Length: 169
Picture 1 (cartoon, rainbow, N blue to C red):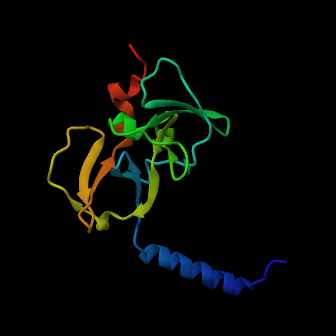
Picture 2: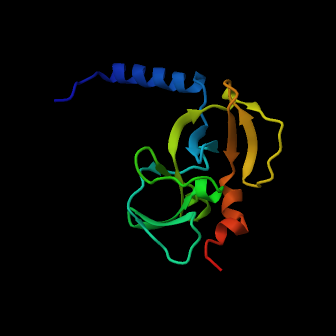
């Protein structure tokens, strides 16, 4: 049987949690790894995160297009972000996850990543001065340990011709 609490206790608990949420540190970035690289994506651009379901292969596609995933009746094209960046492939098991990134843009795309590293805050990083010529890399950042992080611009990635053209010529 569930524990009963009074309306007053409930209201006090709710007021305390709302106050903590307003004053607490905002963690608006999701960290993940793909191909030995550390990535960040804005939570507003990321979608659901889930273990990779069985993937259906698609013939005559580039190796980084690893197949289709059925997520609750909706098909998602799955791209191995590591292979797309020409690094060793991600094994779809263990800590690997799918990050559904195109829902807000009306594109059913999932990125296969090695692992999720958790929520991060903008304040955890300093800008890195070196340039990156990939338009989907919004910016380069360094954490307090000096590790490089690349912030992914999902809309830019999903708009790139080389990303959209998964077929083999």
